[in-house]
Length: 92
Image 1 (spheres, rainbow, N blue to C red):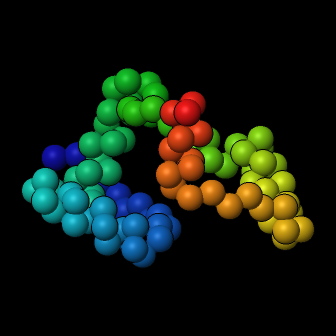
Image 2 (spheres, rainbow, N blue to C red):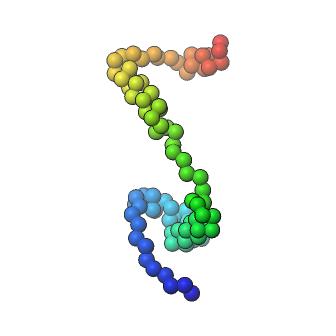
């Protein structure tokens, strides 16, 4: 058996607990799951899944949200019912 060592990492408590529950459902521990991740990273020579930025937090979206908040603060708000919005979406 290969010699092992300890690795300490910081992780949000809730995130850890949720991950442990998912891994337990799969019949493995957090240690086993992390070892699988590391082995796949080494085997593939890259992170073994796609990583991308959440488009919600893009600069353009943040600017649009800030602008909307400013407009709402200035009372520049249009109120529409759901029926009116659906009619606009349908092009009626």
